[in-house]
Length: 482
Image 1 (cartoon, rainbow, N blue to C red):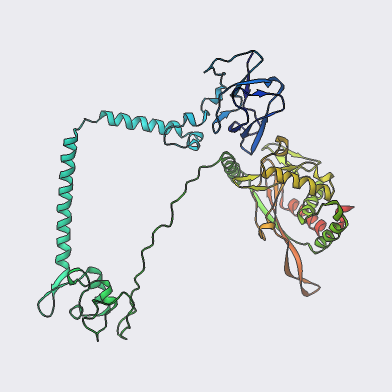
Image 2 (image 1 turned 60 degrees about the horizontal axis):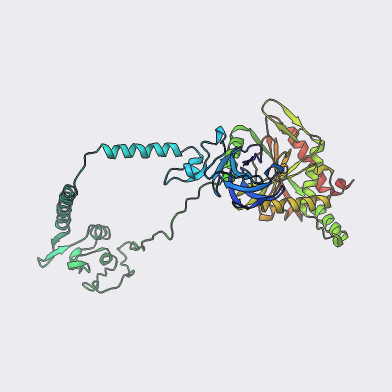
């Protein structure tokens, strides 16, 4: 009988997913282990493979590319040999999938993100209310509407005409020869501030009206010469104040862009907001003298040059963090609100930036690895994280996380804890700084690190002891090789 391909739960927090791409089309053969689709979860885009029971022919696609589906909802139907699936047939949908049908349930004019957040039904209700209101209004003929609009426009013209007449009357006064003198309100105010007699000025505005530039360019010794002058700053009389500059009008150089949140960005925003609001963070910062570490790294890289592996400063930091966490298990822990779970091994999360958000691949049992293995495994994880090719168990289960922004030139920062973990270490760049050694000012390679800890589980002294151990390992890096 036909078999359904359903939306899998690819992470522990996943409730729905977006079908990004189908690699098969209706009529194609499907074999177990083949890649059939890409699915965007709340953490990454992951591949969906066919299982043994999916062997057959793809008979029907129920969820199209770009649409959302709840966990357990049917995505497609696979027919076995000799079986046929009637056109339009649909597999049963999980109860939780009703509101997650993707863009089909999104009201016209609303984004899929609005529907995802539960705004769709509200907007649909408002649109329905607007339609009812329109139908309840009495019908108007086009002739009546035209007459009403014409009357409104005529009334507006009358009001504008009266207002213009009032302005003109205020602008007019008599000159020395009895002729009508017209002055703009701004020019009159500027003339009063500069103590300028308006009768000495020939206006350059329409109809000889005195305007702002006439006041700006006025020279007492050159009466009547302002009308043909170009806009600029005139020489100032000692008795007059500095002229007000005439600034060009600035307009927008482009249009604003509204970017809806992706599924990954939405989950990041939700989880980090909850972390910052619910976890009582406190912060402790240390400066590490990395001079000996840098020298040891150079010597080791020369020794293993033929292997093609090149150890980084970050690899030393990861090894030191893992070693220190084994000694201070209170920081290598999870907290669920009622219980604290401390771990004997370190599963280190490494924050990696993506174009649309952030992902934290996990290097499991890093405390059991040497520096070269850390370099190879971490590089592979980071590359696959950026290509969004991580497996489910490579994105979950971290017991502690590090976030390193040193390559961006960041000297110091604080990070937000990723629950249920109880700590995260923010690592700045290694740089030369002036420090005092033996009462002498010398240049040393220094790194600043800040620990963010959950005060419900970790006390200040506990965090300080962990940082002291970490500092000692990095300043005497040979101790990590023992």
